Amino acid sequence: MGKRLGALSFVLMFALLAGCGRGFAPVTDQSLGARGAANTQTSSRPAPLANPGTYTVKQGDTLYSISWRYGLDYREVARWNSIDQRYRIYPGQVLRLTNTGSSTTQVAASAPARQAAPVASTASRPAAPATQTSSGSASPRPASAQQPPVQTPPSAPPPQTTASTATSTTAASSASAATSTAGGVRWQWPASGNIIRRFSDREGGNKGVDIDGKMGDPILAAADGRVVYAGSGLLGYGNLVIINHNQQFLSAYAHNSRILVSENDTVKAGSKIAEMGNSGTDRVQLHFEIRRDGKPVDPLTYLPRR
Image (tube, rainbow, N blue to C red):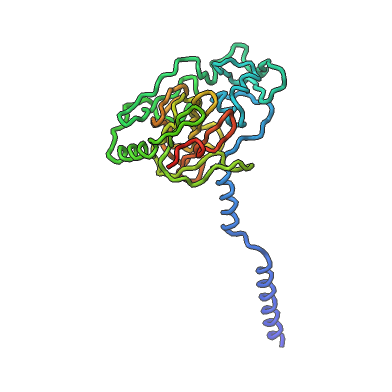
C-alpha cells in the first residue's frame, strides 16, 4: 500500500511540475533577436540627437559634424558663436547650439590659455584637389596632422587595379552617370545598388536612403564639393564622409569600409571617395543623406530617376 501511494505521489508531482512549466513564457532567441533587430534598425537609421543647448568641442570634431549631429545649420551655429567663415573651432571650446541673443563664444575654463591647434579648419589652408586615378577615383591620402586618426590607409602607391575592380568601378560610374540639377547642385547617384530603405520624415525614421552592395564597392561623390568631415566620430554612421556643396546643401556617406579622402579635399561629382562597408551597422550598405540648411531631405527628390 505504501509503495502504491508513493508511486501515485510521484506521478502527481510530475504532472504538477509539467503544468507549471507550460504556464511561463520561455525566454528564447526569438525575443532576444527581436530586441537586437530593433537596435540594428536604430543604428542603421541615425537621426539628429536632441539639442543639449551647449556642446564642448572634442578633438576630431568639426563645426560641420557637430551641426550634423544635432540637425542644425552650421552657418547658424557659427553665427550664434561669432565664428568667422573659416569655421575654426578648438578642443575645450563651448559652443551654443541655440540662439540666445548673445554672440560671445564661450571657452571651457579648463582649456589652455594658449589656444591649441584648431580641431578643424575648413578654409585655413587651400583645398588640395584629390588625386585622380585613371578610373576617376580619389587616391587614399593621410589625414592632416591636426586631425585625429581617420581609418584611412597611409599614403602609398595605389594598388594595381585588377580586372574585377575596374569592372566594378566602371559599372558603378556608368550606373551613377545620369545627373539632375536641383537646388543649384548637379546630383548623381553615389552607388549603383538597389534601395533597401527609403527616407522617412517621421520621428525616428530613416533620414536618408540605404543602398545595398558588396564589400569594397565604390562610393562616389554625388556632386562637386569639398570634404568637411572624414572620420568615425558620429554614433550610428560608422566611417563617414560629409561633403559641402554650395553652403546650403551637404551630403553624407555612411558605413564605409575605407575612407579615401581627407578633410578639405575638393572632389568632383563621380569621383571615388570611399568603399562600401558595414561599419556601424549590421550589413554592407551605403547610408546616404542630403541636408538642406541643416535639415534632412529626401534624396530621391534630388537624385535623377533610374
